[in-house]
Length: 189
Image (cartoon, rainbow, N blue to C red; front, side, top):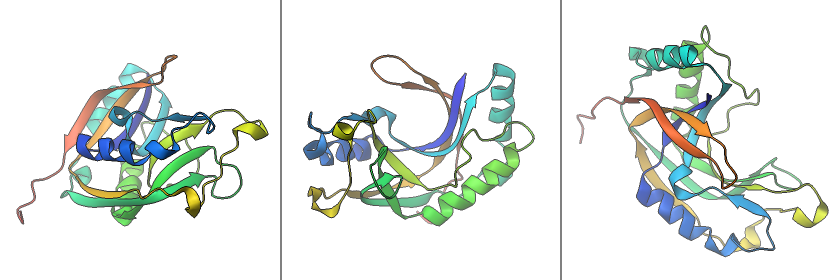
């Protein structure tokens, strides 16, 4: 299975992001937009793993070291990967909760190190993926700048971590939850 671990984003937030990006969804920008139901904050892309290994990952995710109090994530604006030049991926970067995400990423990576190595070797940069630029020709180039007139921001509480299986098809990916852990109840209300 093609698998990854992520923090899901509440439906009302993903719908708000979708509406906020509407001015960018035009034919001139050759972008494959992430559908609202597929938006998440990726922690680890695991690549192709077999069912036995996926089961071991699901068991490891239940370890007490990965149970946390819920925390708040805030995001704002539109950025891109790579950070300079023509964009390949359009993102909204985290403005709040990035340190908590990074700490959780490190703990998760440590807990899973004997089971599976992350497929992505780049450094962890917490973000919400908005879309992927199609094509490499100059006509498909997209460069993100402040003049795009997009005011994209919001926040939500992270209260669970999910192991997803990704199915690729011509309409775009679909994700199925394989396993999840609920974070500890917050006694402070």
